[in-house]
Image (cartoon, rainbow, N blue to C red):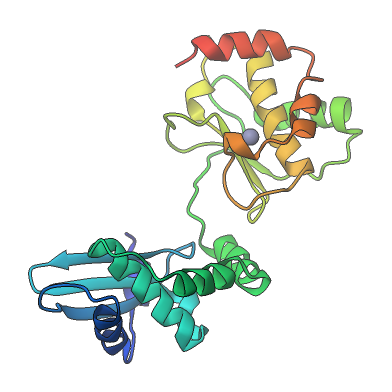
Amino acid sequence: MTRSAIAQTKHVPGGAMVFQRMFTRLACTGRPPHFVVEFYPYSSLTHSIRLREETAYVRLSDLLCNAPLEIFEAAAAILLARLYRRRTPRQIAEAYKNYAHGRDTRRRLLALRRKRARLRISHPCGRHHDLEPLFDELNRRYFQASLPRPRIGWSARQWRSQLGTFDPALTQIAINCALDRPSVPEYVIAYVLYHEMLHQKHPMKLARCRLESHSKKFREEEKRFADYTRAMKFLERFS
Ligand SMILES: [Zn+2]
């Protein structure tokens, strides 16, 4: 947590009452805890609840600040259902889902992430590989130089399972700095970068690169990369 995040935490007027009400509506068992409900500047539509003895500490994404009461109640019900192992009533779950996936919410989320995303990257020129000239070269070769150059950099820390990400909200490509080694050939870096450039070309998702988000077309285009097989082979052994 950052210092500024603490400063931005805001008490939710009437929040405890809503939680009490939903506690009863869901027929949660036992004595209701004392609820402390705050808005928290998460960078996504995230909420959390923690029970410490007699007190439940709730943090709601401050995106809910202006949400209708029905949605506020739904978020409360979902959190309580999780905590007390109750089933969320279907109507409530649906209402929340519609809100969360609604165009307006997604637009606000994107704007928020642009402001708050904390994915730190360092300079594109790493210890052994330089990403920017590589981007330009790949752009000319595979994209007719049509991609605007995003912010590019090595991840500030090594990632365990991810090779790279493209973040459309930040227009930023980050490559796992674990690959910035002399033992990793340039065609491997080029392949990972090329993959993220394809995400830039096909903006189909909000978040980081996940395997299931690669369409058939994406996969076909990926195979146009000259060293595709060689790079895949290398990465299979890389850990
Ligand atoms: Zn991907």
